[in-house]
Image (tube, rainbow over all chains, first blue to last red; front, side, top):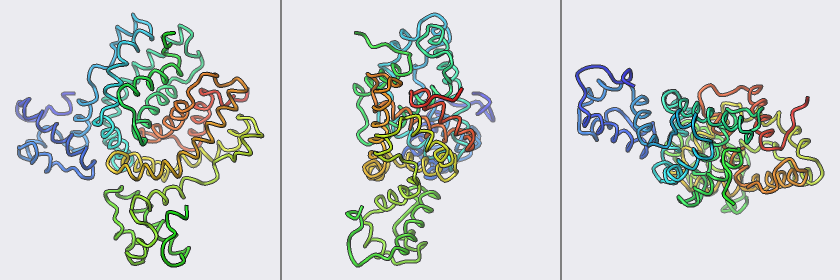
Length: 202
Length: 202
């Protein structure tokens, strides 16, 4: 991602972290519309030019701040996908995924990202290219493994299946009475089972 | 819905329509945060008290404005669900559903509704109770019919399946490059087929 902030003098990691933290807080509090580069600079305790030297638009900055928050290490590596079966991979990430997706911070971020998708398409475009697409490629690799094993239909449309999984979770957390981590664990199992990626133990 | 606006003097349907239209426009333009009862009154050309006489909060008013827009006649009746098979019911609504969900107005509304879900939960609660829940009950009836016919697994979690269908569509329309009506028709067929509600003609 150096292409996105490689300009100007050498970067101070603490300054970067403070700016990203301020951008995330302001985005959660007020959405894209309620966030300006000036406010971000002020809350991070730096000058506005310091922010602009690193990120040219607030959409780029917010997208990176969101990525850092939701990434964690929930993503199986390509090597895992080649070596393990889908059931093992799901079992390896599902508890952490339940914790993350049940958290208030995740809910707030999903709401703000989706809320900005039409009014500020640039934010979704940056987030999609840098964050969502690489994860969809891994999910597609996992589903192709499951197709080889016969638990996902050979003629299934994998893009649609990925939308159904991601869409179910994002829609569920925005409904009234969102699940806690234990409820989300059951929910994720049910989603993965429905798709053919997971068999509940008997 | 008379309980939601039954107060005060007899209602003038044109005034109601103008207020609902103004609320919808302002909500799409600026989200809940960018909409006030005062602005709605001004744009509708009525006094603020006229608005408050009908709706006690902007969340109630916006929820009703959104419901009127997305309802259309896409919903099969309980009688249809009892008499027709799921394939026939889907075929009867799928073209209109594709038209609606591919429209810019639908995308903008989905984004704004989801965007408000965490910061303004009251809006989602009203919308959920009055609009979403009755439609989920019909979808569940349709899925139970499909279970009887054996195209949906007997042990499927219907709430999760409904989230997967609705979640896929709402997530897809917020992604970069949303489909046009023809693309959405293919997309919906793929979603319904995946769940077991639709068989593409050979």
